[in-house]
Amino acid sequence: MIYFIGAGPGAADLITVRGKELLEKADMIIYAGSLVNPALLDYAKPECEIMNSAVMTLEEVIAAMVPAAQEGKLVVRLHTGDPSVYGAHREQMDLLKSYNLDFEVVPGVSSFCAAAASLKAEYTLPEVSQSVIITRMEGRTGVPPKQKIKDYAKHHATMVIFLSAGMLEKLQKELISGGYGADEPAAIVYKASWPDEKVLHCTVGTIAETAAANNVKNLALITVGGFLGSAYERSELYNPTFETGYRKADASKLQIKPVTKTHHKPGK
Ligand code: SAH
Image: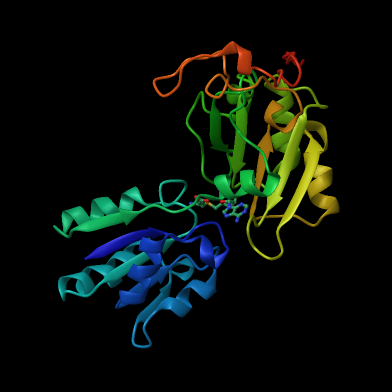
């Protein structure tokens, strides 16, 4: 059997219990050496064969997995964060299907969730943003038409930008050309959940200079949006005046007023 496992964002104890138990049983582990915490490999049996996919091609990864799985070995493909986010995961699953090999996927904590934890922030705030856009700058890997940063910036939803720490001047220009004001809030989270994590608050217009001043060149997420500000409405779900299937409405219990009325800045 082959298991694709999300290793989590970095800290070794942010893998799931299921993922850890499979690492302990694995006969072969192929891990993404660029971002998976090597401490996770300590869970492996001494005889487990361990390979680093950072120095391998897709062909080599498949050539290692297929015979091992055919011999009945337990194979783990350990991806950083969650495999479904920029994991180059689908192409592996499709090739395994072509060999009639069975596999399962064990989800992991994606770095965008770890970044929110580091920021002590909530991406979806009432009246501020009810959507999270996970995206990236166009680089050596292209992005399809209508999916450029400036297209998404128009929505003023929460944005979490992966794989773009090397292009921050261009990123902030695209955000501004899509309608963000240079003074709107942004934050850089470098190596969320690792011991050398950095959390840097800035504005859309100062993303590049903030990263440069703090020597952040890679392994970072850029977050943008009003969720980083102070204004939002309280939730309906926990509002005494709002009835749910679990609780009757009772306006007499209302004590906490909304924090501030949010004013959406249309930007430029
Ligand atoms: N599957 C992974 C993403 C892999 S793409 C996930 O779910 O998180 C690699 C990119 O993810 C990096 O360039 C960086 O932008 C981001 N990333 C991964 N781990 C990170 C972390 N701990 N802190 C900040 N960004 C991280």
